[in-house]
Image (tube, rainbow, N blue to C red; front, side, top):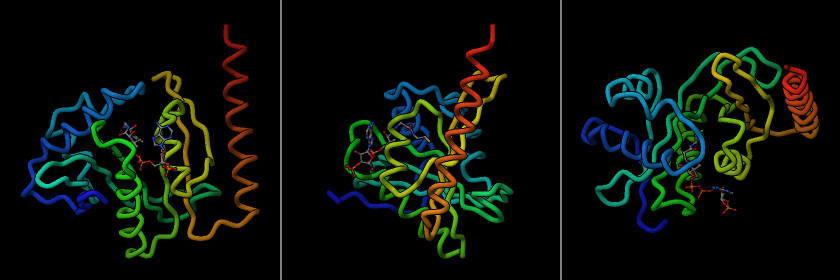
Length: 190
Ligand SMILES: CC(C)(COP(=O)(O)OP(=O)(O)OC[C@H]1O[C@@H](n2cnc3c(N)ncnc32)[C@H](O)[C@@H]1OP(=O)(O)O)[C@@H](O)C(=O)NCCC(=O)NCCS
C-alpha cells in the first residue's frame, strides 16, 4: 500500500502528531468534531483510556489514526462485550488511498484476538465520508440517535462476524423506524 505502514501507537511517536492528523482531517470535512477542540493532553487521555491507538505511517510521518476499545452494550444488535472503533482520521493529503480501511482492519484484528465478534462504530449522521467508509468495510446501519442538548444526530453501525439475512433485515427496519421517528418528531416541533 504505497509504503504506508499500520502500527500500534507507542510513546516513541509524539502524541502531537496524532492530534495534528485529527485536526487536519476534520478541518477538511463538513462535520463538527469536538475532539479537535481538546488539548493534546485531553485527547491523549480520551484515546488511550482503555483503548488501543493505531496509526498509519508514511515513513516518519503519521498520516492516519483509529482507536479500538472494548465496552459493554445491551442492545439487540450488540449484547455483551463489543469493540468500539473511534477517532478515525486520515490526513486529507492521503485521502482515498484505503488508509482508513487498513486502520479498520487493524482494529478488527485486535478485537478478534480478544475474542470479540461485534464491532461498533458511531458517527455523525451527516458524516457521509465515514458512513461510506464503514459500509465499504462491511458495517451496516443499525441505529439513529438525536442528542437534543447538542442538537446533534448520530448513527450507529455494526459489523458482526457473520451477518445473517435476518439480522440485516432487522437492522434495516430498526434503523429506518428510529430515524423516521426522530425526524417526524422534529418536523412537528414549533
Ligand atoms: C472518513 C475518512 C477517514 C476516510 O479515509 P480514507 O482513507 O480516504 O478512506 P478509504 O480510502 O479507506 O475509503 C474506503 C471506502 O470508502 C469510500 N469513501 C471514503 N471517503 C468517501 C467520501 N467522502 N465519499 C464517498 N465515499 C468515500 C472510498 O471510496 C472507499 O471505497 P472503495 O473501496 O470503493 O474505493 C477521511 O475522509 C477522514 O479523515 N475524514 C474526516 C474525519 C472523520 O470524519 N472521521 C470519522 C469520524 S467517525
